[in-house]
Amino acid sequence: MDSKFFAGNSYFIDEKVNFFKFENCYQVYNDSGQNIGSVRQKLSLGQKALRLLLNKAMLPFLLEIKNENEELEASISRGWTFFMSKIKIHDAQGNLIGTVQQKFKFFKPVFKIFDQSETMIAEISGDWTAWNFRIKNPSGAGIGEITKKWGGAMKEVFTSADKYNVNIDSHYANLENKVAILASAITIDMVLKESK
Image (cartoon, rainbow, N blue to C red; front, side, top):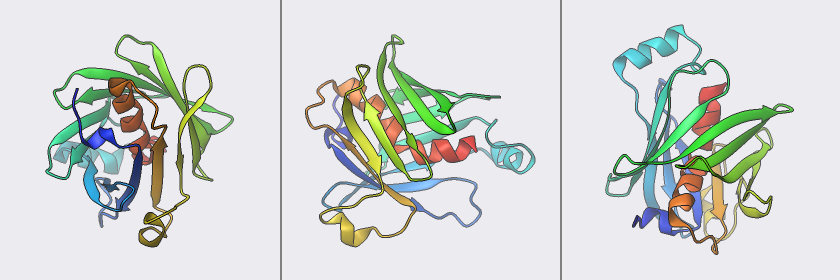
């Protein structure tokens, strides 16, 4: 797997407000402030209609991560659900590279990330209201974070609350697992919004 998009370690996610709010859309920047891609929700006409009638937390969703050339890098999807979600992560070729099991502990979201052989590779947990998440490996050691704290060049670019920063340890070596972890982290705002 060779992905320039996932070669970085710092991602800045900026929500673009959609007037009708049917489809979520986010722009993705690197730590130099360069736009490197986007995350978009794909909805059919039927799904848009269902969102007016049913609780969207039950509905399937598909999120596509694309690079600056509009080429697919990864996707994250969920089928119909009635309680806790099981989310699938695919690479650009459509191969399953991981799954995410969403749980809530004491009203705080927890996302357990597994590789394609169902081995746990990471956990994202934290406080959605304070927007502070830690990414840990199975041993509990920190390998990244999702925050609304800004530094460097991005401090000037981002000021409002609908933007967040995803960082992963630069020493994290397994690229396929890194893609699964980053895909989960980059799309976390959309996943949480769809679960409400």
